[in-house]
Image 1: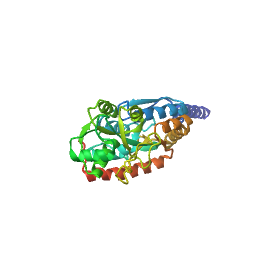
Image 2 (image 1 turned 45 degrees about the vertical axis):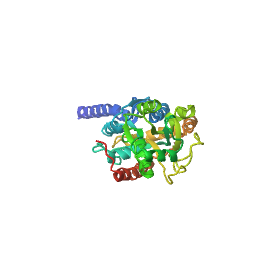
Image 3 (image 1 turned 180 degrees about the vertical axis):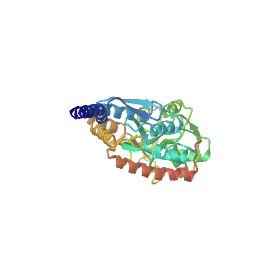
Image 4 (image 1 turned 60 degrees about the horizontal axis):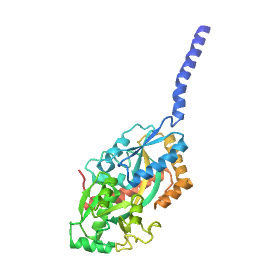
Length: 325
């Protein structure tokens, strides 16, 4: 009997010992670097924003957040891949809320559902777009652009990345103004802006981050911003609503997402690190300097934002019968 008790005691101890490392590891998130997938090529505003947040969150989490750019198909390839990644908190996604919500209506088979296939971590910031044209393009205002386009239907080129808010914002603008453009698709905002700067395309809607210095230098001309109020960075530039299309508003929201089923404890830890990053004076100063407003909140807040954006943009895509194969 004594031998049996000794054996059982040793066996229990061995079992506890074998489970302990796994239990400890489960509590030690993150135990290795986290990958932040940005679903567009380097060079755009999303890339700069994602890298800034990743750097701050790395310090809070005690592990590096490695940025990985995966462009293609308006962000759907990378978004779909993250939705199918392991739900362990080591692969997360930087998302345009609008793009995330637009693609299921825009693409024939995006491969994900924005409400069902992600675990929201939190919103990062809101950022208006700016309508910019090449300086040689012979218009100086939204009113002149509309008149110029009506006189030349389908003859003005605009650059866009399929599935992005910039794409749908242009379609909303064209539909509201009753004009038509020639659509020139690109795989990322970086290459599109290169062609815009070179005068190969006439116009584009872009976030303020990558174009601000070009506007200030005169290498691009800003006609209007898409927010309800003027940007403090471009106070001389009217809103599109002020320029003749009342009620027009389209603001980019950025956020972080994890694969579905990611443990709530990990989501909460990532959300806390994100909110800490957004509370940092240098991050807030940099966002303000680039025209963005921080949007700290809970995972539930971001889930509600996704629902609102899908309702808004999905309805527009269906109304305009837009499709990307």
